[in-house]
Length: 426
Image (cartoon, rainbow, N blue to C red; front, side):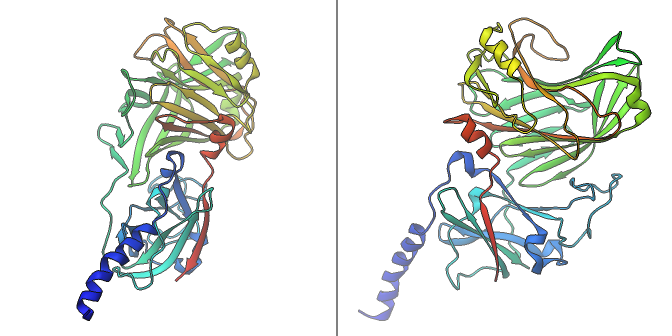
């Protein structure tokens, strides 16, 4: 056999070996997890220009660029926006210790064979290990001309529309606290989620007369956005209006990922304004649209779900009474029609107020602003007290799926468990 024939025979064998070396597909609960790598974890690239850096991975035996983004942060620990009142933590055009490099877990691939060609200089091998110990690899590259054109999150700031391959959400342009539409690709039925609901109940000066502020008086207006392939972040200014006068201002960032949404709310409560409010409480919930038969589980009531039938029964009353612990507060709503949502709340800083469960199951009750009458169900969180002054901060997270499987006490915490990471210089 001459050498030409030998190499022609060897090529498909080599390709097969590369394909066989590919790690198995990730489970759905893992595939769209967003991996975040801090700049301080790759110290040898600090102070490099951001536009010099990109990511690549092995795809079907070939090195290919994969979607990524690098987000910069402000001195308060939130994503930085030019023109906002919190300054940038580092340099605007260079990699800093506080910058974060983002990619999707599913885009990690097999280990790059030695001498595999690729445009640019390989500067780091990022090793991920799933819960079974399987290793997958991503490569940080310098001065490559190759970029992926895949956009896992699409956003139109002009009409307030966010789209991913799984859901779309259109915000009211005059108030992002109101949803004009929500769809989920595989859901069986009409629009499944009606509205996001915020309610601030407080006495003014005295507790004799209680005042409720809802989404009509709690107004969030976008000021700017960062549109990336892994997540899109919108910076908003939130005002709470009483009799047409703003009594409190907050900063909010909304993060949209392929299969999750996060609302990051922060503010400093002026002592004088806080004194005007007597025994304030805040509820944050999502009102669904006639999810008959849906089941709701909570961290404090994981075994006997509340079933949506238009009536709050004895089991649901016990679930409400069980409440929620600020340190362990997941809520799982499964529609049983290819739409599940798991939610969490995380307090920020020293804010650590008592928390309760909001749960309503009613066929007809109207609670505007909403599109569809009825609370079927209306599920969320109650914050039972406010600090007398100073910082208030919390993050509400919603993870979306066709359906979660197994024991929620196991899979709910795992939703936020990221794979082990190891970064190696090259």
